[in-house]
Amino acid sequence: MTAQPNFAGPAPVAGAAPKTWFITGASRGFGRVWTEAALQRGDRVAATARQLASLSELTEKYGANVLPLELDVTRPEQVRAAVAQAHAHFGRLDVVVNNAGYSLVGTIEEASLDDIRALYETNVLGAVAVIQAALPLLRAQGGGHILGVSSGLGHVTSPVIGYYCSSKWAFEAIHESLAAEVAPFGVKVSIIEPGAYATEFGSPESLRFAAGLDIYSEFKQHFVAGLRQLERGDPAATPAALFAVVDAEQPPLRLFLGSHNLPWVRAAYAERLATWEAWAAVADAAQGGASATTVASR
Image (tube, rainbow, N blue to C red; front, side, top):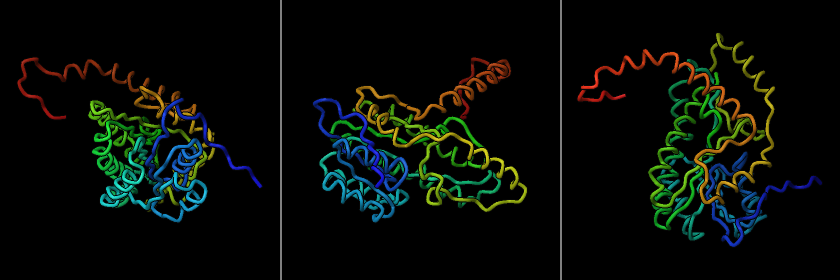
């Protein structure tokens, strides 16, 4: 029999009470890995998924420390009910993990408006629904920590999954604004940005495909071939980083997971800065006179 991986990583800070987590998309991928890791280190988890049956093994293994909840984040009333039930069951929520999401595969021309709308309903509006349901409870208890699971693609883009990238750019902006807005209430916000990992994110359950156009077939074949060459990280190596963030007195606003994102993003920003600098004279001239009394909307 194959030994089960140990995801536990470091124990909670000495003397600290076990944390209570609310995790969306806990049936597979990072959501499942982090759910089990938190339970293994003695924390409590409200684990949510669209199909309750996908969480049954957690109850058998971890008993009262886990509360499985059926949740489709695109249904705001179900989000509010699940968050309230988790809070009432455990008495508090310390860490809220916005993890549910999927990728839309298709060029900008190929994807239909319905495809794009559905993607944003889950990746963006679903995350907002969780935030808005949790915040009153976190404020009332005097604090908490919201973790938004984004991607390195929240800073750079890739062809063929451009709409997925755009959803992560929106996700990043929402969580960054949120961090400033809720800091006075003792609520912390961190954006977790994984690179490429060997999770189920590439499975049919985590991908949607736009109807294809023949003119892009060869381009997409090259793109997919390139993806297959990517070195993928081990998901079981990530919990220690996540625990370091939630146990920190002053956690970072952003944390990359894996070693590939920083060089990639550094190069992208260097290129952007170089372009802005090269066109600075044109940009400055567009400022106009200093006596303007109105500010045009951007």
